[in-house]
Amino acid sequence: MGATRSKAQAAASVVALAAISWLIVGRGLVNYDTLYSLVWGRQITQGQSLILTTPFAPTLHPLGTLLGLILAPFSKTVVAGVHGVAATDILLVLAFLALGALIWLTYKLGSFWFGPWAGVLAALIMITRRPLLDFGARAFIDIPYVALVLAAALVESRRRRAAAPVLGLLAVAGLIRPEAWAFSAAYIIYLWFSGEHTPRQVAGWLAVAAIGPVIWLLGDLLITGDLLASLSGTQQNGRELGRATGLSGIVTVAPRRLGEILREPVLFGALGGLAFGWWALRDRVRPPLLIAAVAMAAFCLLAIAGLPIVGRYLLLPAVIGAIFCGAGVFGWRELAAGDKRRQPWAWFAVLTILLLVVFTPVQVSRISNLRYALKRQEQIQGDLRALVRQPPALINRSCTPISVPNHRPVPLLALWLNVPADQIFSAADRPQRSGQFIATASAQVASDYILDPRDKNRLVVQPPTSFKQVGGNSSWRVYQRCLPASG
Image (cartoon, rainbow, N blue to C red; front, side):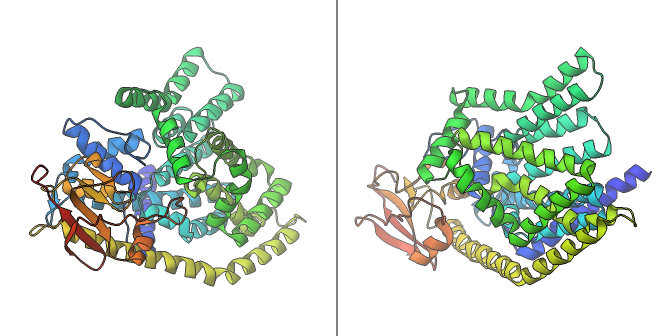
């Protein structure tokens, strides 16, 4: 009865935190990579071959593709004349629930290691970080990955050497991000040296840990004929987008990306929490420190292998940093009343709280900017959707091919028009002599919606002079040159 009530309370907390997160940002928009998962899932159910060689096609994540398969019936559903709207709505609900789970798990782990108030502060920090809210509102798969790893850590914290449930959670996480494979390997080493075990148990551990890499590699082989297609594809996209990578990127870019998530007062509190915790609560510091160490080691290995260094890959170390900041402010309460280490630690806590308060208006401004960006992009995306809506539809499949200024609207239009993504292309990738050209109505629309601030190539291709404008709205223009052979 108690366990059932505890699970119900946890579920209610996750839902409440998901709702609060949604209220903070006000809306959500499914990101480019996750949209491709919906497109690919629908293509598989329709018996079509996946073409992953199109420019800037994202990495094929097994769990993302599975989710696309599950949502395929909703991807085929037509809402207001547009395919796929129901699927994106469901996906956004799941995304906010994953974000709520991540924040709740941050609280639970912080509470377990350094007391309930430390957990509260760590959760409050994470729910007010603009990058985390941004990634959650855009349904990035990194959010459920981090939540699964945190769930595995919570299970192990509550029951030492839990083995099967921990490895099971990490196996699922390993279908989202390959860093989870490092956690599985590290955990098996820990189990090996921390107690008695039989050969059968070890074989079981290895079998569960192998689920992620085996499914990922075999999936790449079956779909592309290349066992390492995900690795090589991600490396190529990183090079084409000019993303930082390698040892130099680890040293020069990774600390900045982590700082962009946590910001200065939290980093200050985290360093103090780690130092004081190592001094006075060493046994409690070891688990989160080991998690952060494995996460950073896996991150560095992938960066050295040529994968890009982006902020999303540092979310897990950021969560541990928030927990250490919670320890820096409230960890002294876990010491005995007469412990002489309480006083210096408490003074450090006061200084950290002052810094957090002073920087609060800046953080509020960042969240306000995020709300504006999401609102603006939702408006532009809504204008694009209006051009697909029937009747009448300015953008349709009767005049092909269809091109867009750059690659960003490709999966969205493929989903709405119910066509494979390779039938819609970026005009920057090849010239177009006939068909339809979807152009942005202004440079401001291009800057607000289709261009990433870190794009290496910020060229926005304009329609060929032989195309005639047939309509548009405040955000987009539709140009056509429908030849008999294509129309």
